[in-house]
Amino acid sequence: SYELTQPPSVSVSPGQTASITCSGDKLGDKFVCWYQQKPGQSPLLVMYQDTKRPSGIPERISGSKSGNVATLTISGTQAMDEADYYCQAWDVSTAVVFGGGTKLTVL
Amino acid sequence: QVQLQESGPGLVRPSETLSLICSVSGGSISNGDSYWSWIRQSPGRGLEWIGYIYYTGTTYYKPSLKSRVTTSVDTSKNQFSLNLRSVTAADTAVYFCARGRSSSGAYYFDFWGQGNLVTVSS
View 1 (spheres, helix red, strand yellow):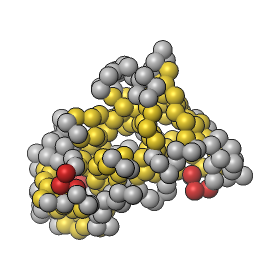
View 2 (tube, one colour; view 1 turned 90 degrees about the vertical axis):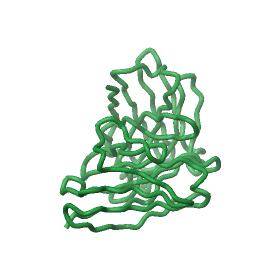
View 3 (tube, helix red, strand yellow; view 1 turned 30 degrees about the vertical axis):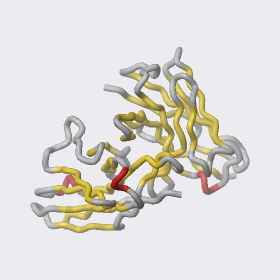
């Protein structure tokens, strides 16, 4: 079955840039989206189709992809950005696939 | 603004059937570009997609759950539902309903319910 791999945790200082990666076989041929989930809340879509931001998501959150690695970048990280982040893609054999999630800590 | 709300029991006994309903407001479930999905999250774990149903009744399930999952849609009530048979403790999770969208090969969930914790225990 298809898998997406994310680092379990990423730490960043306030005001700095955080980068969260998501890798998978032939991910370059698929579209990736990202969700932010804070404790006790539902996931929130923050990026879709690799680089598109839904309405209401700040411009300091951006998405990119190079080869088989997608990256969610948060510039000027704030305490409110501390959350779990999940990538997700569609694969013809497995349908919807989520990454294992990355806990972003703002130190 | 589309809103989704899960409802159903919080406790299910092992070997029985877990049943949940998702009520949709702020938009029609018959919207042709929406795929109505169920996703779960075990305590302290990641997200797991269960399956989706289209307003026509067409379904698509995660292969490993396919044998135990049934979903249905009631367009008159703007609701869709999940039945998961023969549950075990491993099915204990927060169950979310969500609206799936598809665009140019991309697939993503733009609106989610608040989640319904279901515990499987005797």
